[in-house]
Length: 123
Image 1 (cartoon, one colour):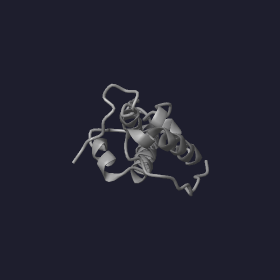
Image 2 (image 1 turned 30 degrees about the vertical axis):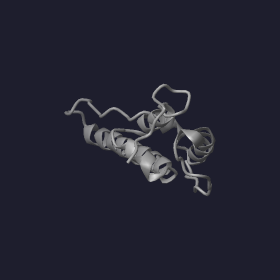
Image 3 (image 1 turned 60 degrees about the vertical axis):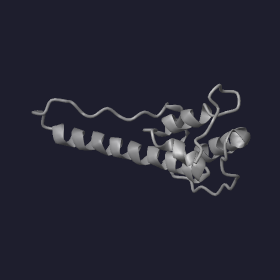
């Protein structure tokens, strides 16, 4: 699977006033980088290997699964970082409690003007 280089440039997310345009552009950016599955939750973290520890191929299977977990963590962090780079510092403050790209996207989505709690943190 080839990795795509991000070359898009658009306005940083300031808050609810430019969320729709930002979300449209960010979706395209994340799709191009093959990261959108992390944001939608369709690409989930693999479960740790829990097979028979006495099996001859246990170590190989364990290592392979761990590599998949590490890759998921790296790609999920890449998705969060991509979103963060295109947000103002005030919006980035809201990222702290988020544990994944999906959590981050969902949080930003709830900050739209149509959501009852549509506010970002303020300094």
